[in-house]
Image 1 (cartoon, protein in one colour):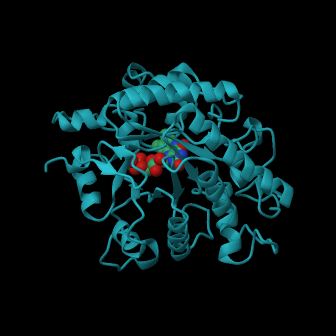
Image 2: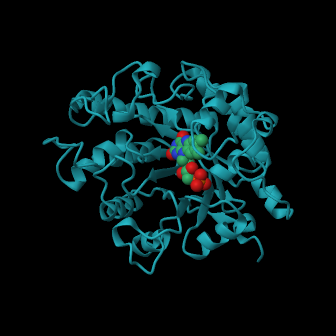
Image 3: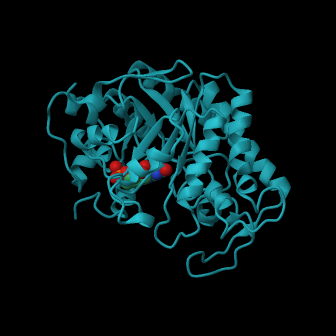
Length: 366
Ligand SMILES: Cc1cc2nc3c(=O)[nH]c(=O)nc-3n(C[C@H](O)[C@H](O)[C@H](O)COP(=O)(O)O)c2cc1C
């Protein structure tokens, strides 16, 4: 089959069907209000991506409470008004037969106090330092349980809004990644110490969502299994173990954000395998795998599927091509990043969004 990734269906074990293997990666955009209410611009942008052929769309990292917000203009899903806005996203996606997933997020140590009702928080107190200028408050057990409740109740709101599922953000040094990380989690109670204890918060969230909602509601988890930048302490072998344990809790997919799916694993630079192959070889076979990282065109997408991914998530290339799948299937040329401001305006991005995109290297033309 030509364009396999853009044409081949996938059946989830819970009976949900995906019309192809192409996922819109979660893309933060600075288009929501200060209180997390969604704007028409972002709702329309997601509808455009659904209409443009993506089999699944994952929304931008979405706050599970007014606390833990990491960006200006970050969407939230913790109020009735926001639930109603997600209902429109869900309805639009259904019209295009696209699975709409909301990415549930709490910033943890990467909470930005100027956009959030609280200071950065972490499993244990972090003193102010170069990389964490505000430091972070250690969480007590009551707050941990309340945060678990926030994730679960946002998932319930997603379900009642008609979304196909949720993706729990446990990557990029945000809250749930902080709990996994022994350099940040020095707790000596049931939420720290052993691998099981450091994973307990994520496991509890997944278990409670699964218990409270019907089985056909998709639960995915996003991980970034390698260290990057100044964020250290994530162990790739442990991230594989974490994934395989999440498989036992019946997650519907694992989403590995790899920076570059085809590069060598950082810790075995001499490996004959790409990072994607290395990971796939170690996962329990029945866990559907989404990979993201420098997958721009259909050749890359088909290659990633051939190397073991079940789905590919398109980030940078989707920013300028909300109709990525339709273009690929029509044999049309994709518009390459960096995108002109005019092009980004024409496809519906606001000035605030374009300013944010400009802060990320390689997205917006000078
Ligand atoms: C503008 C922009 C916003 C992003 N926002 C999020 C986000 O909200 N949540 C997340 O998990 N990853 C986010 N990412 C990471 C992407 O989902 C993706 O993993 C990354 O861009 C690698 O894919 P690519 O090489 O196709 O761009 C963002 C990336 C970009 C470029």
